[in-house]
Image 1 (cartoon, one colour):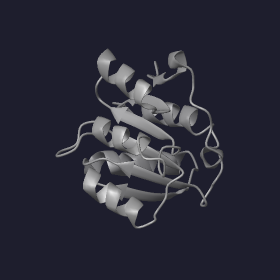
Image 2: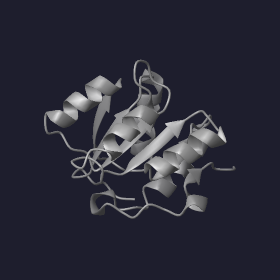
Image 3: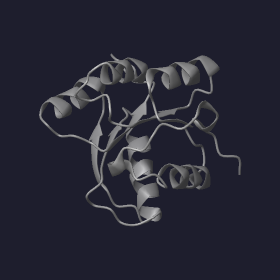
Image 4: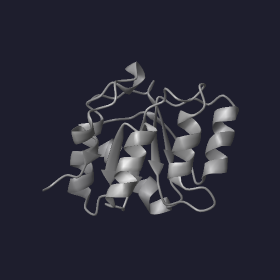
Length: 149
């Protein structure tokens, strides 16, 4: 995994600790994209409307006001944004959440890690993709990333 400053990653997550961990793990892997953080959906959509376009979006499901599933539906129903790959990040292992986000068009569903080693391994799997090239969505059986260490 190489330094790729031209890659633009959005992370939409209301939890400061999760945003810090995300940045730290990318640094540990030597992945140095441009990262834009949004704490909630309205901030995220404002950034998009202002023309700040990501190559890939990491989206938390559990956020106040508008949850990540609603954000995903709005993104995928808008032709201007529908091709942007979305990786769902959630503490939920609930099959209905996983299935709903797959059907709505997310690329991956990452169960929120509880250890640094787990998150490192999960991000290695995610960043083997060339997100600037807008890779195809994986098959359903490859959609869930739940690393067993």
